[in-house]
Amino acid sequence: MKARIMEWLSGGGARMPLGIDLGTNGIKAVSMRRKGRRAVITGVYTAAIPRETAARPSLEALSAAVAALLKEHRIRADRFVSAFPLYSALVRNTVVPFRGTSKIRQVIRFQAEPLIPFPIEEVLVDFHETRAAEENRTPVLIIAAKKELVARHLQILADGGVDPEIVGLDALALANNYLLRAGDVPADELAMLVDIGATKTLLVIVRGTTVLLARNINVGGDDVTEAIQNECTLDFSAAEALKRERGGALPGADTPPAEARMQKAINPVLTRLNREIDRSLRSISATLTGSEVSRVLLSGGGALLRGSRELFAKEFNCRADYLSSLSPFAGSPPDEEMCPAAVAAGLAVQGLGFEKAQVNLRREEFSWGGGLGRAGRPLAVAALLLLLLAGVAGWRFAASFTAVRQEHAALAGELERIYRKTFPDGPAVGPAAVADEMEKRIRQYREAHKSFFSLAPTGVSSLEILREISERIPPDLKAWVTDLTIGQEEVEMTGLIDNAGDADKIKMALKTSPYFESVDVPSTTASGAKQKFKLMATIRKAAAR
Image (cartoon, rainbow, N blue to C red; front, side, top):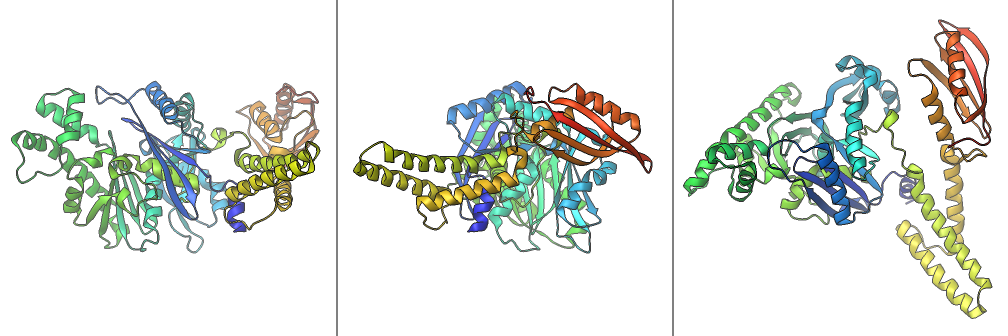
């Protein structure tokens, strides 16, 4: 129980995350909450984007749809998780010659550099450990995204009123959705996840809990719509409506002539999709070592085409069903509603902390900085509990002894209720014990999150000072900082630079900051081919914020 409380206090699992997926036809979002070790769906939301053609919606239309989604459904969430599209990312398999997540994190950019056709400083890099390390070798999936594309993704959401704490990858969100549903899946079971969207299809192949392949296929529901449009001489909207109402992946025994004509137009599109999936399977045949696909799990709006499950079962000679039908989450709506929201559900799974594939592209200058971050929520609860305790004491001076006892009992009951809601598995404790516990938690948080709470006399936090230093140092100047201490009144920095003149450049850059009263470089000494420097800066007592 203690471990679960500390996991929640440290932000390891939000109570009400919202996964949000930016689609071509609209925005899909799923909210979840924890119930023990289970995920419970609390809402599935959509905001449609009107379309007259197969063209992708504008960035403004996407932002407007996000804003409409939040406004219409009055969604409340304490963590937003969004999906960066696989078609805008680079995914590479490689092996890191050692083990340990923290060690891999330190070198992953260097490992990725020869695999990426862009300057490494222009991309954000994260990774997923695909299998357990063996003999100091760890297989990883490297995910890289150009910073300008991540910035655009965040801007779309920001314009719609969303600041995601996590930016995951849509393909891995799909994998997380499946892996939580599948539970203890056999290590040799080969599952194929096929998410058919409007403009593309996500293909994720998983063996056991290992993601073997994640691929974007440029065939989607719009291709089916356009085939109907051309065959039946309709505009895009009418063809889309006809597809939804009467379209089918397989002909029936007594298919009317009009539907048979439409079926004939659809078949080449589905054949092209299945051919691309088959090519993907062949590309990893050496890895499969004789394994056969045991099941196909479909999702996305395009998977709702009548007969899709039967078609995939026939093509790949295995079971085929909707992903949402596999061990449905508590609170799941019907497949028709849940199918298009599979990626959003996987994002919410990551927001709860249940993910197997943990990827977050909010890194470097895009790191999430909302409020006090993960520390804010538990401290707010602590403050509320302590305020209630203060109320209990205050009432002693406001009424007669009898009234005080009544109010005390009511507040104590409310305090106990909030405590039980916050810590559902905690032992029964009285108000005094709650106060002691919360004061202890606050002391722990102040120690663990000094960067948030060790404020200078001016009220400037250590994080603000760190951000100011990062922004002031010229971007073309390379400095390897080996030690940085941010105190109440002074900053001390030591590190390595290419030449002694660079220390003066850093000094002059920081002198222009309103945060520092004085900046000095007391020493520079040779250290091999580089110069070791030490810098001292006094924090201004009336620093501008």
